[in-house]
Image (cartoon, rainbow, N blue to C red; front, side):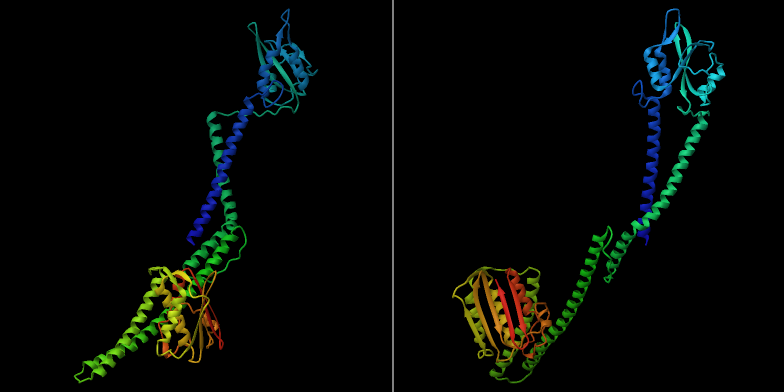
Length: 471
């Protein structure tokens, strides 16, 4: 909540600062433009010039003729005609010496106050004109001249104040404008921020929910943040799936530990029992000692197999197992695995058929790991099916090397197939004859992956199983 208010406050202050900055810049630009327009003249007859400036320069058109008569030259007359203005030139006593297109109701003599009021105010000089006044000095004599404008042509604003009061007034006005604009900007910024920051607050809430482990959230993917909401939804789904998977793996690991503990405890009990018997003060025959030693050795081998399986799958999973690849005939390796199984008295009578497309197929493999993988898969087919099950093992080359292990046994359910390559998983048809470590299929998968190969398995209950290895 604190973060959300910080976000809103930061947004509102940003809007307010921007608004006030824009107002200040506009005021500076406006004052600068007014000053520029009041002091600049583009040309003699038009543009952004000041009329006061031109009236002062109009004296350049006044000339003195023979007999000390005053007049204006043709250029001045042309300009007056074009702008529909008139002019009256006065002597030092404010009497008319010359005029051009002066209205009839304008007097030939003016008092100082008339000139002052006419210059300062738009009050209708002579009844129908606004005027500006200039001065021309000729031969050490000062002459005044009046430029007349139609009423409404000029706008005059007279401000009379001392500098200190005017400065304070401008300063207070600027402060008032800035404060009012700042308050207005905050109000409107807050109103707009509610709409603009609402989705950001949703995103923050979503991240907080995900960080707290609440993955059951979903946001509508609309607005300018639609892409972000989509990623949040995807992240939520992924984290939820990962959590489910983690719990499932954790449950499988716990079950596996319980099974392994039981599987290790049973042979350990046998080993301990026979060892205690041998420790007794009893005259055992050499034949009995050999039998007891053979049982202890088998139980120890079984425990070693469990530990070796665990170590191997961990090394393969973490890419820490050294792969010693060399050129080898994969046909001979698979054939030797089948022969070794036939040499086991327990499986010497089982129906296992070996097929090959050609006697030699050379591949770059780790022979030990590949032999381990083939043995795991064939033994799985043997121990999980009845003695009547037929097994076919074939090797052929078609772009890549393919190894097929097929049986017509009990088959594997679809639910079990989904987990068949997971570590610690044991199928429901695993009997007492082969409890195993639950790592055989996972080890086979990791060995094939280490050789950049692939393994596919398909099965149907009551019809058997087909395992395809591609190297």
